[in-house]
Amino acid sequence: MDDSCLARMHSICKSYSGVSILKDVGLDVAGGRVHALLGENGAGKSTLMKILAGLIAPDSGEIMLEGKQVRFHGARDAIQSGIAMIHQELAYVPDMTVSENMFLGNELRSRGLGIARSKEMDELTRGTLARLGIDIDVSERMKNLRISERQIIEIAKATSRNAKVLIMDEPTSALTDNEVGQINKIITDLCSKGTAIIYISHKMEEIFKIADNYSVLRDGSMVSNGRIADVDEKSLIAMMVGRELGCALRTRVEPRSELALEVRNFSKSGSFDNINFSVNYGEIVGFAGLMGSGRTEVVNCVFGLDSADGGEILVDGKPVHIRNPKDAMRHGIGLVSEDRKTLGLVLGLSVRENISLPNLGRCSRYGIVNGREEKSLVSRYVSSLRIKVHADSQSVMSLSGGNQQKVVLGKVLLHDPKVLILDEPTRGIDVGAKAEIHELIFQLAKEGNAVIIVSSELPEVMKLSTRILVMRNGRITGEVLGEGATEERIMSYAFGN
Picture 1: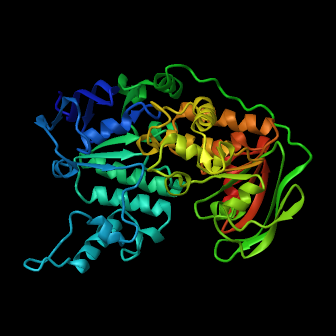
Picture 2: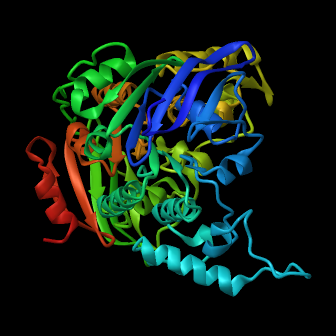
Picture 3: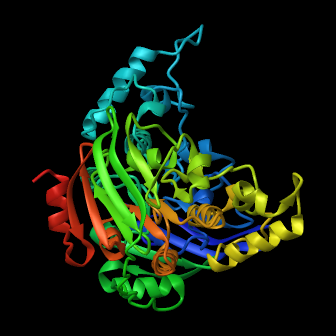
């Protein structure tokens, strides 16, 4: 191990139920550097990092920190040794305040009675956030913050512990470009102080912008290490998926003349105002805009997750009343929500149960589920969506984020919606799976489905959409044809120019 190597993992192996997840994996991380850990969903990245963070124990292998072998018996041991991890699925207590979450498990208490020193924790939290350039009320409950704000608080919590090694698992998946820039400044500052950053991301542009070194995991084995400066995006992707991806140039999707969905004069106080749009069968309509522009709020109301104050929805030219998701599904509308953990999945159930749950009428008689029919229905989507599972009875909680997203897609597609709404459909999904989902979206449109996509990734919106509607402050400020779209033109509408 050279002098610059701050942390080293050597010959790490891990298996579950006889299935090998990590196979003799090694990783060297240098202080003051950003080390990108890459691989498809299910490659073993999160498992390897959970071992380094003390959350799970390896079956064999060793961890060296600053030249000394360490053995962790839990996350607290790792934190005390200077290793902190920011998880892709955020770990916070919704009903606690920002400062209470910042000090969770490490509360400041008075001697004797052990009463929490709330004012002191509030003040220290304000100081930490101020140093990071973050302006959030420390007394606000976490459940009242936007997803992006919760993400930033988790990053702030990790940095406040003066970690020597900071693991960041998809830290920018829910952030705007401005917030991503803010995180990059924090990373640069931490590296200047000698902190080693292990950075997991599926966004190639981020990797090439901030990373110094890289390691690629594929099917539980380390297949390549090196300097980012010595590789290009095409070669990195080939290492990750074991093959070169096709260029996936979009083929022209010709919308049909029949209207599938029309929304007129849609309004909700504090969220959006006077929204008008339509989607034809065979058309892909994209919604772009900055975080908080109202995109998600609009599609949630269309699907019945929330109620609009005014306006109407028409399906096949006829007005419909959608009071809840059941009404929406009855009228042929399906939604893949941006928050798969809360709204898309029942984490305690299996893959099969999650996919079949809203579709039990197709595999049951007189209220009794036919297990054979259920398994047959589900297996088709497990196969076509390439969901990596040992069996469809596997708990959905044990899957990687990308495979969980595929389960949500399978659940919605099994209901055969004629209008499919996809809110951040590829957030946290690896490049291989993203290409597959893009092809699936094109195929659905070619087959005549009407598709609505909400995405924070402009290249994704531009690649997929026939038309792009841009929102700002709850209003549609512009419409751009997909073929003539540029990032500059979309962002000009997003900023109100």
